[in-house]
Length: 175
Image (tube, rainbow, N blue to C red; front, top):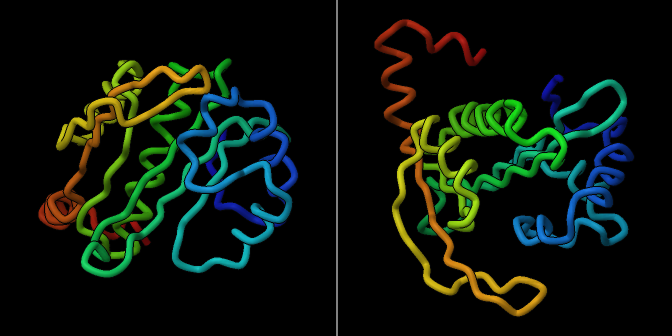
């Protein structure tokens, strides 16, 4: 499995991936990923960072790091979705790490990710990468059946990671 930046040759496999993942996973996207032209539009972007986990010629995961604007311009919002068949096999971790590296490259100081509290394995994975719970939003997510779910916001202070890498002489790992 490789994580590759979104490119024209990955657009079609990514669209097929979006059609394959459960509809409940579509809540974690900032856009309607099934709408025509969405992925093609992403190819024109420069600041958001998007990547695809690929096995062979098949997309098996997606990550987006979306820098915020205005008074939160130092913050990026991380979105990670993994093929249900490959969850718990390190794909999400690889995608999240890719997102963290993108945050460093963009000079962000904080990355946040929103996770439904029922997704205990995902929360554990993000915590193992240095994310910490920062907020609990009660009844914040409504699923297709109308049931409400709590949402946890986890944050990673990227500047601390960069400082640690610089102290250890590892900052060149980004280039």
